[in-house]
Image (cartoon, rainbow, N blue to C red; front, side, top):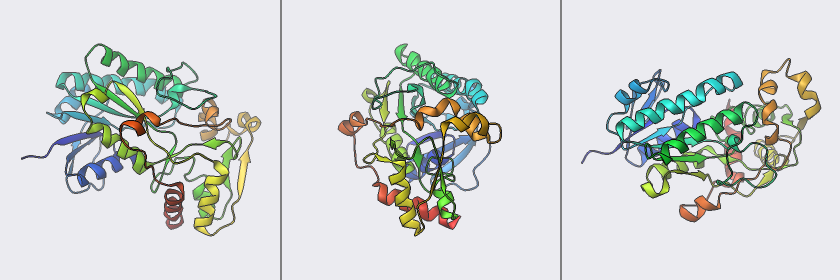
Length: 312
């Protein structure tokens, strides 16, 4: 019997891990993007396709029952506002033509600033540039679901981290800096609780939904996370794993208007202040009750990530 083939659109950190986990489980994987990856695991193959071209996606996807959308778009507000809705509309169009289900690798930006733990029933908000773009994407798949056109499951994670994940709050500017003997750079405060997800757990949740029955679609799911800690506590784990002093430079919010002139990342993060200036806690009890809850322990995941940056 031929094994089921699951297309994965996009091959960034989550797409790579999803592909690895699917092939380990015996699925065939079709990686779809504009350029072929340098390396693919055994059991995966490449098909050229542009997420903005529904017709090309239809040709690439073929007879697949479930499609995984795992693209990343450069961290630029103008690109997000223009390209995220286009990418989702195109993917939904292709899935509708083929009768395929969609698993969407999502984040939590659509909730905007909140002062309580994030739950899946929070509505999307029109706030800032990047949150508004993700809110528009959410409304697109929700309308497609309501109209009976495409069954979609959105798998949402907070900041994710792990080996190979550079652009993360536990990435090059924090753990990477510690590994290089420099202070970790944190915006606003190091002492707010902040949930993070290991990239393997994110991918595992995506694979879980890809294998789930239709009754688990047309809704969002939060990826399980390890017990919440502050950024200071998270980076202390990294420093201990590296055997270096734990040094942090906190960049105050009032400096942002000045720093954004010189540091593009600060400029692009200005509408994302709610990730740093308050507790950022994710409620994943819905997923845990339905599927699994054994997220990677922070001590293990951060130590592994620290070793990765030490080798870089």
